Length: 143
Picture 1: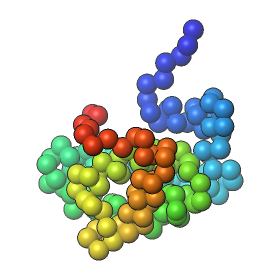
Picture 2 (picture 1 turned 45 degrees about the horizontal axis):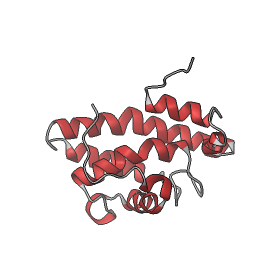
Picture 3 (picture 1 turned 135 degrees about the vertical axis):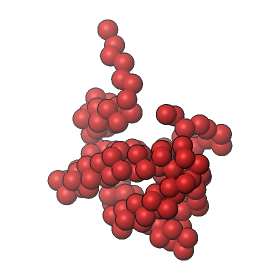
Picture 4 (picture 1 turned 180 degrees about the vertical axis):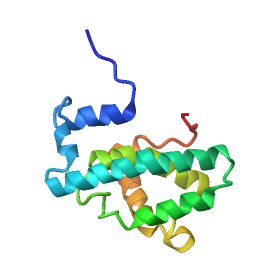
């Protein structure tokens, strides 16, 4: 029978492993890019999601901590996508959370939050069909 995958990060990993035809292209293609992909996924999942969730649940009371974190990772954006010229699983992992944080506490900008690279990346993703399809005008936090 079919295997049901319920965790989005696991699903992204499996896609990049080639379970879906062409999905292995989302790994990045070189050791250097794959290292950046891994670093972004760790930062998003182990830091941004943790601090971002706390900021949402506490009504923005620790939004300064969140903005400091986002500022600290802003320089890691290679551009135009997180790890370079192509979309990777890092972008797929980061986009839902960073887009929603931008909607909740933003807009994330260089002037307001020191997040100019994240802003450019969010705008680029917003123009990219694959990401554009995931943007909803009404949504909820999934935890």
